[in-house]
Image 1: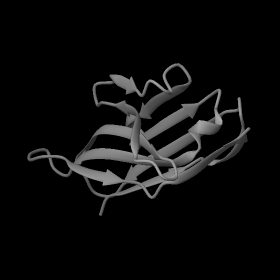
Image 2 (image 1 turned 120 degrees about the horizontal axis):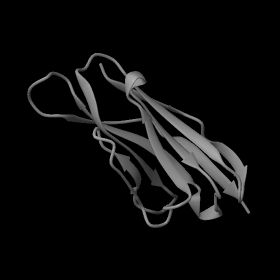
Image 3 (image 1 turned 90 degrees about the horizontal axis):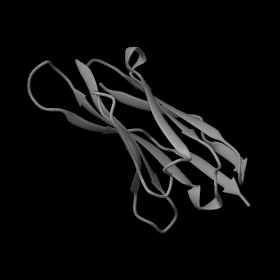
Image 4 (image 1 turned 60 degrees about the vertical axis):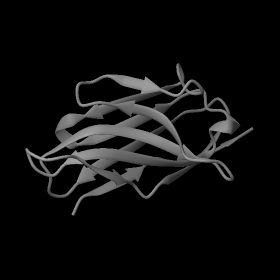
Length: 121
């Protein structure tokens, strides 16, 4: 059974930094795309940052230049370094991964349980 386990959320003042981590565990062939989404109260879940297996990255306009996504491929882990945090970054942050269970066939989509990030003004 594949699991994504997140850590690193918390409460921080505006202008501060946090680093989120997400590790994929279980039995699988390979982790391909890994991404971070967030959902603020009353809003839809939105993509924050994504990292492909080949190392390309993409960011939401609202976080570009402040957040950095990175991966440790050996540990099947993705990180989100969040700097210059703003109150509008307050949300539950979810890890997402597209994982290949075998060397053939298609990927499956997995989600973490979410971690709360609260930025006070």
